[in-house]
Image 1 (cartoon, rainbow, N blue to C red):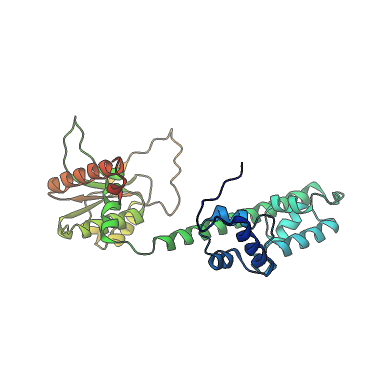
Image 2: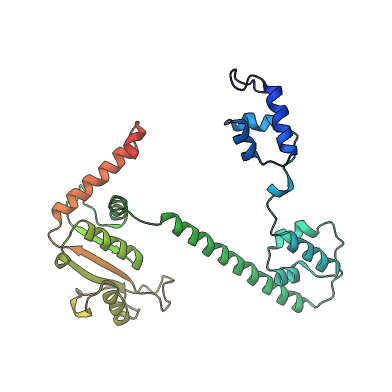
Length: 292
């Protein structure tokens, strides 16, 4: 069902459409037409320009056009999807769409050769995926930009409530203890404690690690990460080896976990608990202004 236009400045729809079409055929973009005719309603602008194609200069070039033509050329030469993928560095699904109307080439290689090409194709796919993963990661990092004190405060409260020690009704222990294997997590947690003006002299550190790992190397790693000497670490906690389990964390990058304790932290723990309750209350409030 077509929408009716509102009375007022858009009342003369046909006259407005005539002007919009004329401007479109003169080569103006949607934005230029909108500004020229003072049309601030996108639905109305769509109706005014219905059936009128955009001028060529507004079309974005398709970066894959050249790849598509090259893929079709190679396919006509008898290349398989795997060979084209290795050559052009594009996904096999894209190649399939581009060349599916072309005749399928005859098989001219041994199974071993085909397997080797398929392996290289899969490696190319993994490389593309990793490039896309890193590109997305970089873009997301840029979106964060700077972190205000309030943002770090809220992040720290959520981080502690997810990963830190918490008092239970059956075991009242109001202490601040944070354990994690991710060095970046530890870095953010320490930055949060600094924001809260927790004196560094109140901090204690201890390594927790599997007994079959390189304990000395892990102690050196964590001490260096937080800027202390290994002699300042508390006694390392060793996890007993269970031969019935298939332990995955056996690489050279495994350094166990670091435990961070805040001495005399009962008051701080109570405030953390209150801050978390405040976040939950604001997030579930019916008034959205409480969430800003």
